[in-house]
Image 1 (cartoon, rainbow, N blue to C red):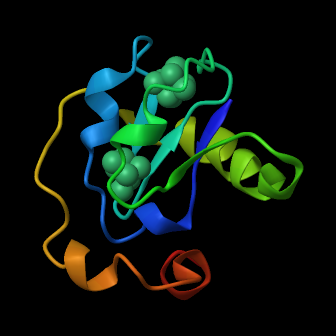
Image 2 (tube, protein in one colour):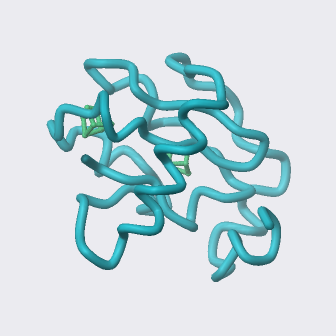
Length: 103
Ligand code: SF4
Ligand code: F3S
């Protein structure tokens, strides 16, 4: 699977959703996740994200994949691009946003 990581939080540029051939992005208040059970590993979304939040699966991203499994069961599917969150440009370079804003 590909996985959305910390950079997405409080930004949500949503360029990623329109290119996914299987429509497997799900939207929370502060970020999107990819449903790992639906992603077909095509990789086309990776280059669409302006803040490089989307990465291929790797051992160090296991926690993010677990979060994605959990949240994709709770959040709604998103397939159409929409405006980013209002302060996206302010938060795009901040680190450890999950710890600060999502727990
Ligand atoms: Fe969708 Fe392909 Fe990205 Fe997976 S890698 S989320 S299938 S665009
Ligand atoms: Fe998030 Fe990047 Fe998509 S910021 S909504 S993963 S384009």
